[in-house]
Image 1 (cartoon, helix red, strand yellow):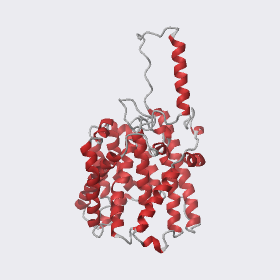
Image 2 (cartoon, one colour):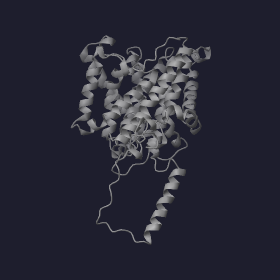
Image 3 (cartoon, one colour):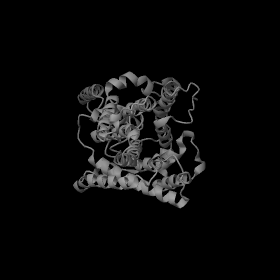
Length: 407
């Protein structure tokens, strides 16, 4: 999921996943957000006249090749990770209504929710490593995250007015609908990236902030601040990770241990189902709201965060490093993330889970496969072309020198 500069949202567009130079992350948001290349030294010998035209032609040819191949230079591991993570997001959302009738299904739900957003956010942080707060990057942050949030939140409110038969539903842009909290969080996380990169112990500081948030009942619901702060350490961890750290996950012992760790996590989750409130995974409530003392809330937060890091590492260890049939779909994860919201809410409002066969154990497999298929379709180029002006609108007019996609 990571690349080299902060263009769009970590999940999204093809421009976000350019393969970085060795010094930059194997996963930062798009090459467009990398620092400008330094000018050549004056002492460097100039090319001869016979060489110059040839170099120019070569560069022109390379540029044309890049235009024809939008995925050129992208890291397949990052795109594979983004695609597989967005599948987990979709499966978790579509699977939730089935968890109330099956302890095993709820255990599977616990495992998915224990790592899927932490892994997604960790990659988002790694993709943001190139963000330094330049005017062009701020413009891309606004056009790639803030504008889509306002647009989709507006559409979501209209949709829920119709689907939920609630014509008076408020256009509350300070209370993100369903999964839209992530765009608000990513906007603020990325905006503060220069701060985290300059602190001596950013991960420790972010953990302290998150732990404090987890025991602060007065946090409120505006902009999903509680969830934003509790997930902050994963974004900061992504900022701190180097490509070499991801390379450690390719070692054979790590890859062999990944599946047994997930199996052990499933057993633990099965044990925890009747003993644990699923709301802990949402990270939207304080310890007091779960009826536990402050110290227990901090311990719970740290335990869940540790489990999230371990499971995220195991997940990334299983992600293919080479190009696969789904690699190109990693460029469309923002579309899948935003558009699947409307399908998930439709399934709840229009009782898609009412049929009796969905109470059978085999229905879990069917729902997982259907959810995976839906998320896959939503990542395709066809869907991206259809909804580009909603998810990635042009907003050059907001900035003096043009800050939209052409900036």
